[in-house]
Image (cartoon, rainbow, N blue to C red; front, side, top):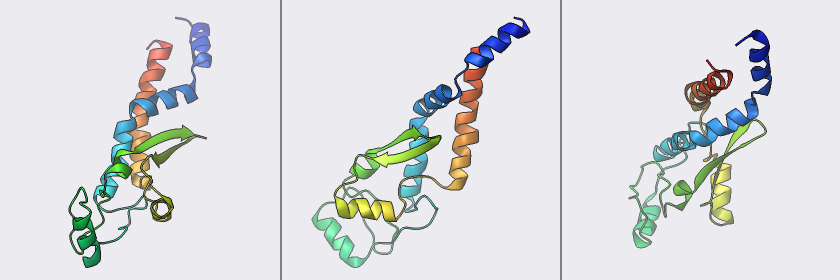
Length: 147
């Protein structure tokens, strides 16, 4: 292949399309980073969201929460499991956006939003960019130009 042929292939490479494809292929891994934070009771800033009180424990037992609640332990976000199961990502405006189909009603949605439960820490963002997406993009690029 000569320089003119490489140049033609380079110009036809879609960076945005490759990013979108990379995000779709690695979405489960990216979402799992958010779920890992929630399992530890942490928000997207890496801060503890809250701990369970005695009242919450009684309420959880009465309404059969999916995961046990222990007084003083960090929130685990598995009341029905809909919030965690419903997490998905989209790629818009050069950014990955975390959302959930299990946001519930106004009060729950406000709690999720106000406490920054959807998303990842800045360290996890670096992992997504350099450890997850960059290798995929490199593979797409090499394949596209025929290396």
